[in-house]
Length: 253
Image (tube, rainbow, N blue to C red; front, side):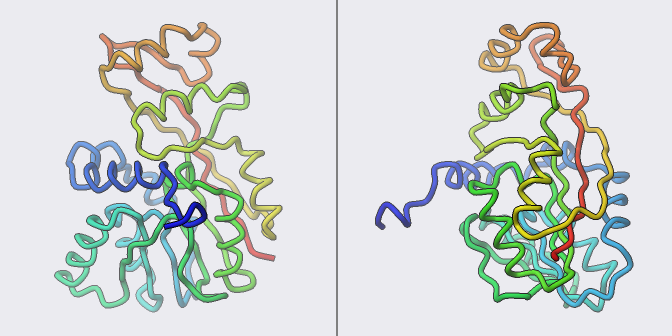
């Protein structure tokens, strides 16, 4: 393998991490949010779709409900976590869901023809994309004209100019690249040939486990910095009590 083809370290970290955690009940409990799932299904609209792509499908949290909501569309979930893809595929066969498939990919190249999809969705995965602008260009390539991209991802606070939240996220070594501000996300998609159709903001809360690395980062923050995400220390467990999630629809021009 030459230097051009060498797998980025972030992709390797993400594959190893998510092959491990996606089968754990603890992780599932953290990402589950019935209200948020319902919102995404509503934002997806009422259909007319022939083909839907779920990028970073994980355990199929969004792909399975999409296949149920849009029985006339084929839903494909892709992920770098090949073991999770195998589990999802087995579950889809077991349930007899004929309009749902899963496949592993390398995290960089979307292995589909031009105009293959009417709708692309991704939930809590965009911050892992190693080359975000290239990913947006590829989404544009594989979307049909007028196709929609629904991007749901935690957002960096406008006041977080140093990316302090990213420092915390990278401790996990799960391939985290960065959270984007709403403005930065818009810029990526507008540059990629999209227009912004709508955005609904929601909130999420999550813990960083009791580890010295997290406590050390927290200890260096000023009160003003902690307030950006309402971060608190609960006996060594660092809580992000409020981070905004952007649920944004972009349309290919």
